[in-house]
Image (cartoon, rainbow, N blue to C red):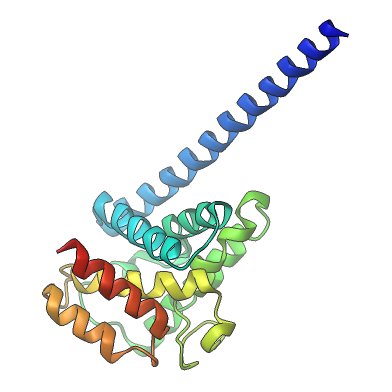
Length: 209
């Protein structure tokens, strides 16, 4: 009986270790995908780090569980993975896009969904890549969702993504200062963004400064 118990403990320990190694391999792969996209778009690694970190902090403030936080971190890391399907002449264009080019660019959430939907361990992480361009007032894309019909993870990330984008230089505009960005988030509360998420990010960023 003692030998059987010892064998069972060893087997359970081996399974836990194998699962841990597999999780690490999964996450290393996701980081590799994110770095590849950043290199293509000439982004810095700080972009992914910032948006993942702030998204997770807001999610914790909103009471999400650890399992949900893991999926949110993965989704935030892969938020623009669908841009792999956007041609370079559109993705890297150093100026405003035409209406036809925007029509193609706006397909990237659909591209992300198609890429990730058959990967079992990413099923719960799809919400951010697929939904972070939806808007609280229903005027977003690709599905035109509104209010709480937009998954919470996507509602959180959409605020963080715009915050980080506006603080960064772009070929068609210089970076905004933090105060201007926070004012913009407040202006868009209840329009583009979930008011509850805006309230939390403004408080968190104020505490960090």
